[in-house]
Image 1 (tube, rainbow, N blue to C red):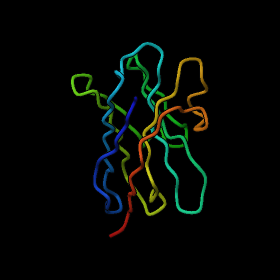
Image 2: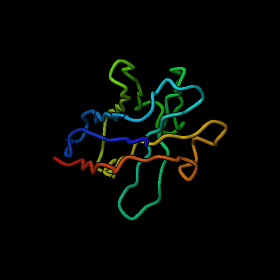
Image 3: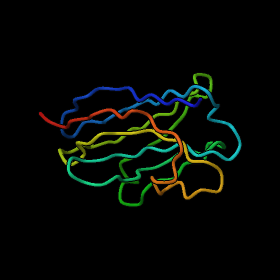
Image 4: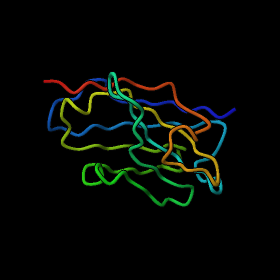
Length: 125
């Protein structure tokens, strides 16, 4: 069974960088053709795909977030990370890491087959 677990601070100050880590078990983040995503849901809003890192290490970002987002991985720990810079209160959300299967539309949250439980991040001074 694939399991994903998000970790990181629950409170970040405006203008700082939000950093989250997703630890994966039951699968390798280098397994061919899978894509590993970061998705968030602000309060009262829908799911928003932020970006992804593929099995190959290639990264993909939502255009409107690209300038502030960096996704990387540590294959030795089977983890991938999200960094979101210059945060504002509008970045307050529940953040999820997910896995999207081969040949899926990985930028569509509905096509992720495994999800972490989510972690609340609040941006506030």
